[in-house]
Amino acid sequence: MNERVRFSPSPSGGLHLGGVRTALFNWLLARRDGGTFILRIEDTDTARVVPGAAETIAADLRWLGLEWDEGFGAGGEQGPYIQSQRASFYQEALQSLRDRGLVYPCFCTSDELSAARIADESAGRAPRYHGTCTSMSSAERDARLERGQAHTWRFAVPDRGGIVVDDLVHGRVEFQSADIGDFVVVRSSGGPVYDLACVVDDAAMNITTVIRGDDHLANTARQILLHEALGHVAPHWAHLPLVTAPGGAPLSKSGGAETVAELREQGFVPLALINHAVRLGWALPAEDGILSLPALAERFELSAVSRASATHDPAHLRAVNAQILRGMPQRVLAASLGSFAAPLPEWISLEELAGAVQQELVTRRDFDALARPVVDGGPLDEAGADALRAQGARVALEAMVQVLRACDAESAEEVARQCRGAAKAAGVAPRVALPALRAALTGRAHGLPIDTVLGLLGCDRACARVEAHLALTLPPDPEDSNPA
Image 1 (cartoon, one colour):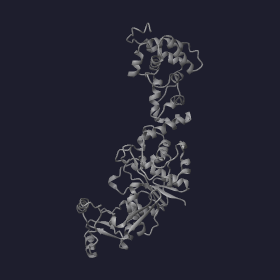
Image 2: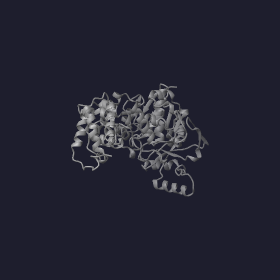
Image 3: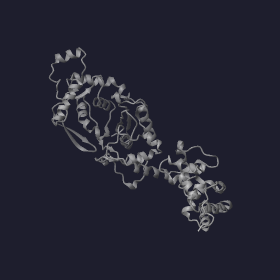
Image 4: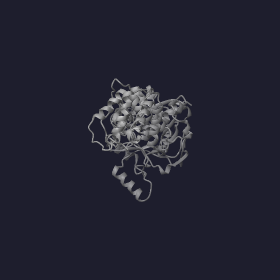
């Protein structure tokens, strides 16, 4: 079967990892079977719409490599792909339901419905509509409609016993029609609720499989009833386990989950988010390592998705990102840094510097923090100043600068070895000498290995920096002139 699947976010904010996982699983199923991936914007809940959010979500999907075949911004034969532009489709569906007596107007006010809900909860019952307006005569209904009295349209749920959802993740799930209650399909504003809009659009766009979060499983019985009432063949269903934050709360926009845009600004790369998100509910063997999107599509099976919730572990995401950055070809890493790399002087190239710091990177944002001290040589931070004032530090620098002035070694590693030897010969331990040398060269007591720093600077530039620090008037250490 050529799958037709859709990712249909609400434009109420940025895309977070739970949404990435849903979009990714839809994309993988479509690509595995040579199917079609559709992006549909579900904006019928106008109160939650954030201007520009749809465009942001689309940009995030493109950045992740999850291009769509039809939908928002791409067009297609089943458009438009923004629900607020599909009002005529929903009105046609409502009229079809009205013509067959499957819906009725409900004139209950929000206060009346709220009072009924409170009464149900107080009695320990699940809140549901009690059919207040079902006993109204057709003459009274027509009169109220004629007067323009505010009303919603409710679907009359048939007393049919069980409604079975054959879910591709959860297996057989059964709901009882008696527990559902007649539900609203069109608001008093005339706009459709989620269930009706979703059903109409899935049918019009020939969606074969609906892959979405577990929080929509409870909607499915209502949507099956609507598909049947409108004469549709319902799609297959696959409800994914919710993604939770480390504390156990559902990962959500309202809960402050980091968005793709925020993770991008933090220096994560697309493939890291993909390989992290794909394991949120799908148990790939650890030995598979980092996989490309095409490789993931070849392996993807909905039947292998867990029913249990999956926890987003930020440490795992960082580890995956670090593995990808450290495995990149040097030129590819340099090209990917973009705004994370500040302008460099002519004496050093971005590619050379990227290669030097590569094995220390966790995110791309780390690049400038690692590289800038080497490029600028300072200013001193507190630990660097302490390292230069440590007992024996000046003696060590005076010994090591002699090595840098001679600079007869063939490699930075050899220069570093000779510097350590000179400091040791002067009676200063490496734990004092090396932080002092690094501080003189970079302004930091901690950072890149000394041989890496020396290799980037070269002996002449390194020598000049050490000499500059030796020329400073520092509080003398009385033991520096006669180290033990």
